[in-house]
Length: 379
Image (tube, rainbow, N blue to C red):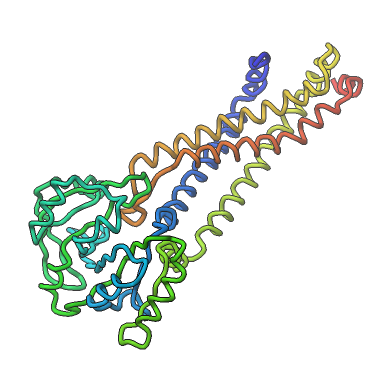
């Protein structure tokens, strides 16, 4: 940039004011980054949901079980490729604040139902041959410093007693947003030791051959079990995940409101800063015009100054947000997906640039329209 020295000389003429404006952008974009991360954490289940997966729960509530006998009937339905089932365990590891999902799984079909979860074959075989075996997600194992072969005690809150498991495997996800905080163990172990709900499962997951047939299969499945003691409610995995988010309120709207207020305030602060800067340099703009610089040059100079402040401050804030997310989930398992994606950084820089341009329009236009005679008369 030919006049970059002039731009930076003008910006740092009032160092305190410029630094405070940069700080305002940094704080605003840091908040934007965290809001984007929280939004992504809440919508994680929707974004990673398989287009070819259906979830079947009890029509009354997900806490009500379904018979294991439904599995064979589901497999006989046209278009169904895989049927897996799971049950929620609900236990405590060491401290009640150490929350993470503990799920009794169907080992025969778990990997076919969730191909995005990757586990070495030797670890999976070790899991299959040990009735008391468990598998943990990579981030969960890292959180508690678990390693293969560890004996992990879980105190049951629903099923009671202390349950001990041998860690035989650690799974990872194909994508950064895949949930690697889950804890799996054999459903048969739960069915043998539980004092109630024997022969029942928590929910079913179906993989279907053609995602376009999902709507029809949903109706067929629920009609199949209508008027039975255990009626079903079937949804696509995406719809199932969205229903959970809705129970927590309109997170998206809340984030938009907070973000809108923050950036409107930032717009006023930056616009005021640039307006004061232009007013203080009236005579200098007049001299520039007298020397032959055009009105467009003066307009561009002020706009570039505003844009530079926005991008430097915004980049600093987004950089801090990225560093903050490197530490992983700070909520103790409530937001397992805590990641600032590159697309969010690009969005943030775009918003910062937009605020810089909009806030600089009026001061720049005022400087452009300045008449040399009127300006020099004020000196």
